[in-house]
Image (cartoon, rainbow over all chains, first blue to last red):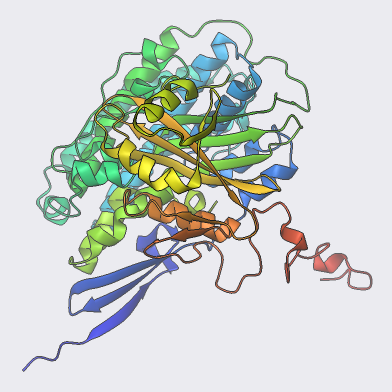
Amino acid sequence: MTVEEQYELNIGPQHPSTHGVFRIKVAMNGETIEDLDMIVGYLHRSMEKLSEERTFTQNIPFTDRADYLAAMSNNLGYCLAIEKLANVIPPQRATVLRVIFAELQRIASHAMANGTLVSDAGAWQTPLLYMFREREKILDLFEMTCGARLTTNYMRIGGVAFEPPDEFYPLLNELLGELPDKVDEYMDLLSTNEIFIARTKEVGIISPEDAINASLSGPALRGSGVPWDLRKAEPYCDYENYSFDVPVGNTGDSYDRFMVRMFEVKESIKIIKQALNELPSGMHKTQIPLALRPEPGQVYYRTEGPRGELGYFVISDGGPAPYRMHIRAPSLINLSLLKQLAVGSSLPDAVVTLGSIDIVVGEIDR
Amino acid sequence: MVLGSLQVPGKDLSELINNSFADTIQNYTEDWVELKIENYLQIIEWMQNDKNIDAAQLSNLTAVDMLDSFEIHVHLQSLDKQKLYSIKVIIDRDAPSIPSLSNLYLGANLQEREVYDLFGINFTDHPDLRRIFLWDGFAGHPLRKDFLQMENANPGLPRFPFEEEGKQER
């Protein structure tokens, strides 16, 4: 005779498979998850409230700390939103430099996402550090340009803060030369690995209809076969001039989301090479007033961050600080389907699904 | 005016809505179309199903405190038609309440919980309306402009504790 009894299991808030201070409460029956409740807010720093008291320029460092694994992309989205609101046009050189840094950031972020996903799937540490090898070189490039590795605070309203130093370009070229081989090496190691396939194929399947209805974006949406990329759909920073493809998955399982990220790294390398070829000379920044006062109005500006649609909704009342700033955080909204995906599956599968969606807790909580 | 390239100007969207629902539009500008609260759910549901508009995805849902009222801003988008629609609803500030979109869009669930937590706006028919970032029992709703005047609101420490007189050594 077997006794069936539901019990509750806490994962987190401090747990290696939760990617930060993130807590999941699961109700389990034997090996099967029957209910899931996610508890977030441990990292809530009330950025949206704080930003109402600071000038538009002073708010840029907050965006670093929202998604601390993709600070450049967050800086870029915020600066573009404010530029749109205040009718500031950055110089051409700044736009191309922004593309280079945003794509480098995407590679670094995807390296982290896929490294930790493989780690969640049970390949302890070795594949993670393989990907970190290249991420480290990108962070070195960031450090020599702006002095910081993670919270870069590099973009400015009207351009970028600094010109990259002379030794930046040879090192970047060297990295771009070896990166495709390293990515292939990493894919050889994992994409045909029997254990990795067993852990990720057919796990956490998201149908395209559910993905769209649940507001998913980024690799989580494209893994389900929906070719939606804001760099193509609503180009910013002249992305329409670069030739690159939008990789999509077939089945929408964790494996597809992993592969979409790997192929996006290759596309990002292509974009950076094109950007380096057409990097114009000139100023890297325009002068804007210290206390910028945009005309009263509202803007909802979206960019394609590494985790998906990163939107900044800003309302100005003509003062030096935003009247309201809202960050449309892909990490939070991509979790909309977590409960539906987890219920009925086993706990290890739910952990892989969470890893494949790729969250950053700083961006969930803001 | 500041419009993203996919955004449908408010004038065009208001004409589309007016053709099917007369007298439901309160106001519009280039940026947004303002709906009356009693038609809000009905029109969003129609926009989701209408073949021409095809608002399949809820891109963003948030609120703004306008001191005498709250504004709810909803951004819907069509991935096939590559369009973004911006909708606004003004709601009463004393007993703020608005129908939930969670039954139409799964993606509204967490965003409405966030607005409920930080603004104290009630979403009727929401399946799981709880605070999301702050704990139960937290006094007040921080993104309201008058947060510090609310009952039991905690303004935090005036300075770091060790800066108090006589307590310089930590």
